[in-house]
Amino acid sequence: MQARVDCAVAEAEHSPNSPPSATKVLDSLSDDWLTWKQCDHLQSKLIADCHDHKIPLWAVPDVRATWLARRNRLGRGGYSMYPNLSSLFG
Image 1: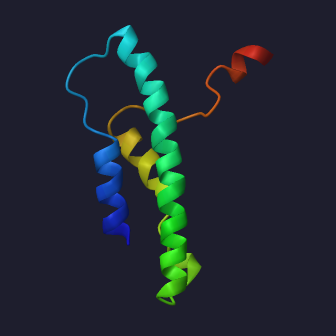
Image 2: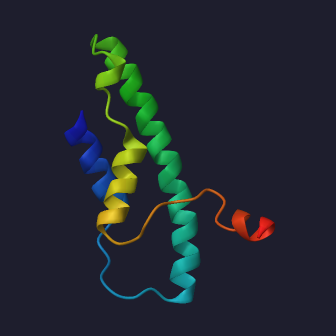
């Protein structure tokens, strides 16, 4: 299961090739949201598969944790669903 998650995350989070333009940064925010939703979908499928194959729930990989770890390795940091929220309070 972890290999399946690693492959899916590697397809969603490509290595950077060049510095991003301002448009690319905005596009990447919506891409990040879509990737977040894909992680949720894959997590649901893994949980359903684990039930079908009698795999304990604690053995199911955490897709979002895998994705965030890959983002950190690529130097992109974490992901916040609400990036401007802290500026509203500070």
